[in-house]
Image (spheres, rainbow, N blue to C red):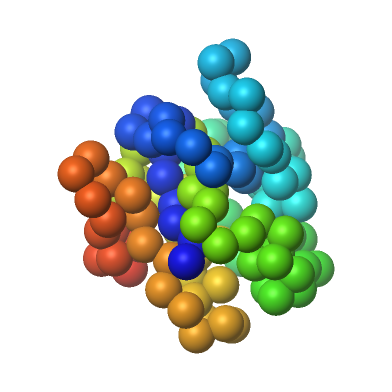
Length: 123
């Protein structure tokens, strides 16, 4: 199983950053192919258009990747990390839904005290 998490709430082992940048303390693996492009982040910060973000991210990132390869590269048991706190709109939720839909798996969010399979579906 692969999980999602935030740099703010998960600092355990077997992490992989899927963000463009990461905290100075982070020394784990990175997977830049899943990071949102700077141009998308800039536009989103300017207008907050979630629908545009979802469409752009799908077309320019996810549609260019093979979900089986991503899953294999990230490895079972890994936690995909980025900046947003749990429950806020974030590309890691788009990645988790994409993997779930394409591979018929569950990618839960790691939160304090356990996992949450519903936080991703609420976004």
